[in-house]
Length: 497
Image (cartoon, rainbow, N blue to C red; front, top):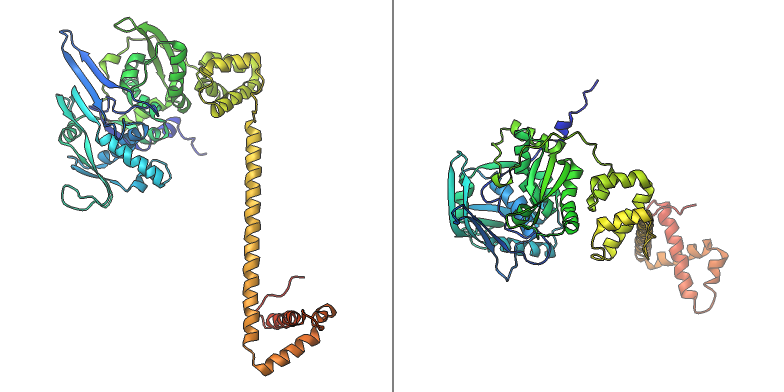
């Protein structure tokens, strides 16, 4: 009997990427699609002196580094740096713009390559003012206090610092950045998982992984982040009202709950040092997080460093929880809490819940921004059995229409192909028949015409009676006879019965 695969082996990441732990803790990009968000982190010690400073400024011509620039840094450039031998060379090849497009899962169109070109410039022109401490791979600590940008971009056809002409896109690492990545401690992340996540959820994974690995290593039941610190280091727009924060976090959490990276989430309301509302975010490691930790430790991964500011007090062990059903997970993805999601499915049934989820998603797609709090709307709609919105078309009906449209398009394409084939066949046969006639001598023309008339049927003979159609009729009769001769010689296919 074959042994069933072990769950841990199924979940274990197969394609880790090692990322430096010095600069990757701090944000460079805004993760919202539009607008700007100030990145200016300052922390003071007990003497009132600035102990940590991290400020990022951008060039207005290219804009603030956004989601695409973030994906380029974390999925393309970090991968190339990780693949390079140590010490890392100053000049690193990224590939052509089309290759980068495909690696990011985008079509290699001119529009997409222009966006990538601009995003690379956003990264290159991001100016960092830093005063931070970080650990080297030997465990010692180093202070970085500098104003710098990380790298320069050399596009295809431009000259590299070594004098060669660039045959692809290259980055040229700047001195401060090179010093950091050649010396800093690294940690592994699941590269394929990173690629699958939207930017905000990906950044959350980068930050939470420090705490998640620390919690698993030290046998703690939960990892802890503060909402305020997540907003600083992600960065996110910090909110103060829970009914706004809940859907904000739900969108970020949803992929991690679905993948099993997070098993359960709890929230504790608190306040920051200035008395502003804050929340403790408590995460129970899921099967994927534990499988990651075991796989990385098994591969000889480095000791995971905790971020001291995020350390949680020991918490009581949590009872095992059943994972949400797919329908409950859909509700949770729209911001409904896990307990209310389970209650709604249990009380109202899958059909009633599913149709209201469809109503919500229809309205979000057709009128984005109209529903300010999707979770509250959804709970109310399920409990009061909201009527379908005007113009609503169910997912099943949309799928049926799409399938019918595709079938119609496929039939039309097949008809066009058949007509094209028939037209091409007719042209080939006509060329053979005309070529046959043109190849005969004058004497043979007369013989051929007499033989053609002799075998013609009554209807065809009517065409050559005296009148304007006689010449046209003779051509038809000659061609018909020539066609039969070519068929008898095997040069044309026989007519279908």
